[in-house]
Image (cartoon, rainbow, N blue to C red; front, side):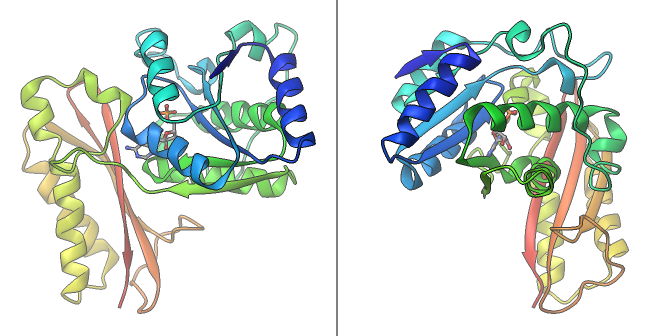
Length: 284
Ligand code: AMP
């Protein structure tokens, strides 16, 4: 496995890979790797000849008072995990390499970024769209693998790649969960044992809502209220937002149409971290 830290070296290597006729799969991450990240590498390895993973804690997607400096960093362990997962190239640029002092360009995806995470974390998606656009420009033509765990991010990145005609096919991958249902996240390390136990309430509430839909409930507001009541009943959890949305537009339908698909987006704070989860439902 190659470890590359400059833009020029990564470009040169991947241009040669493509010139030799091989395809490139790319999994961008902020490190502190877990099985969710490694599932992206596995999907890339299945569908592409050469797998590239970036490990870069991107400062521009963290807001004031967020955990940029405290974000878990474990490069040595990550390199071992990446190698075991079949990654061929790890890209580990410095902040100076990605953001030279004279850079002034930001990528803004309108519409999809104005609600939910965009509302709770002003500027967050500009940071995400800018770094992902830069990484796509550096990696070049590829398939890029993103987790459905960050569902709005996946929608934003897909829109951005299409709008900017980037030569990248964005592929969404299912959420990888702990055995008790908690969605894997690098930020789960912040949870104390009682909070870790309480954190299962997110997935439980989503499953309860899916059962309601399967039993015939079609009223979006009733479903959201039911999830909110389950989260409220857990003293260590505090609801940030819950929204039943169209999976592409992220708009909330009043009534779930039969034959449609919806996504339930849920964010709750448990102790320090905001935990994100979501669930897709096909409406009969
Ligand atoms: P992060 O390092 O948190 O920026 O995440 C890097 C990529 O891994 C993103 O595309 C995430 O959506 C994805 N990811 C994080 N957690 C999971 C998970 N539990 N299951 C699937 N993908 C995930």
